[in-house]
Image (cartoon, rainbow, N blue to C red; front, side):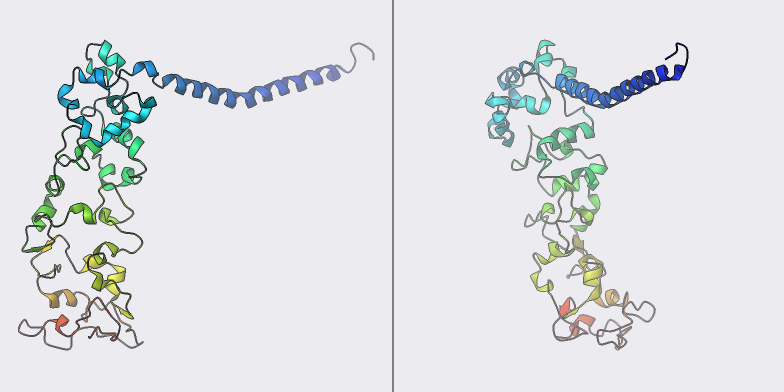
Length: 320
């Protein structure tokens, strides 16, 4: 080949080599970045020498550790090679705290940490038992675990609550406290029931944190089995809106915990000429839009005849 001719033939291999090097660098970049990030995270993890052990903690915090032997969290002593480290599983390694003469900024303190950081510490162990807490009303409102639980000074020892139910719940839910003081109520104040019998404060897939599955009223029919069904003729409102469409579960002036004091007034909310939600009856005809009898108070209540109001196996108008 004559020198000076076809210079592009010499340049083309150089361009190919440059492109290959660029691609190799790009491909190697993410892997190298991941490796560096992994090394950084590993470096940030506390070393075993950063833990001082619970005996060292006890030398200053004897008033806290004295009664800790009966605390459920003592089982954490089996962590970190069964080295007896308990306090630091929650508060973090204490070496810097001790060497700083008890410097409070060198240790994780639940009393000063944000609700998000507190919850992250607790959920790191209890996430399996409470997987829905972050999206529960309590979690979304920033009510942290230590707002209800006290590891060192609990009044209710089984689940380490700051106070026994229902007093603990009533600290925030004052409206429900007033409802439980009505003449008729579920026996929560009397100690025969607890709020957590019906609600899971850590979150569920149901409204109001109800302990329920796909069957909305399962939490009610767990005790009120006679209303569970299945029935040949079902009262539609029970399935579509649930028990609370007619009942106030916390308390009511009505002996059946109805939302209103008089049962006829409750029935007329749906069964009236103005508000007829059941235009087509079970037999294909037109269902009664309203009562056939005088609704003055001196006459009998609807449920005196329509006794099977939750559901019936014999009558589409819920007669016995």
